[in-house]
Length: 135
Picture 1 (cartoon, rainbow, N blue to C red):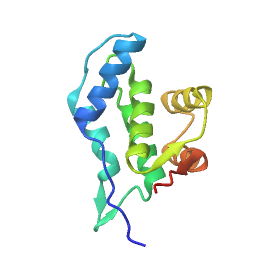
Picture 2: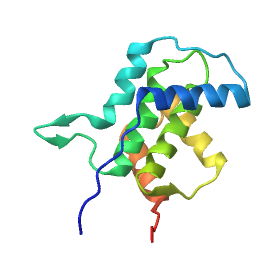
Picture 3: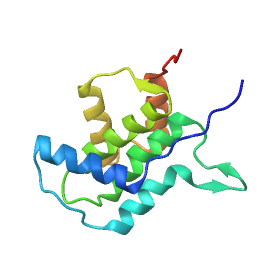
């Protein structure tokens, strides 16, 4: 079975997700620190010795959620942008999350307040993500 190429999000993708959620749900628009966001968005792609630091789709999705949330690069909506980015990354790579909004909110709050680390987020995503069957 041939491994498919991983599709990573771009800075523009995350900026779009953030702008869209602010427009629809409210909050203060704007980017507080572009450099912090760029760093957060690149984290899932980091490789050492030709191997990804975050191994597997779940770990990469967790890296988006964790680092975007922790970077606090936006004035408002950091947790929302982080969750949407992780979900979008999973979707473009053939996965979906089987969970509700309450669980996603609790996950994002846990990252934001420091009670959940990246490995806990990876385990959570691995538990609730499912591969989408494509015919």
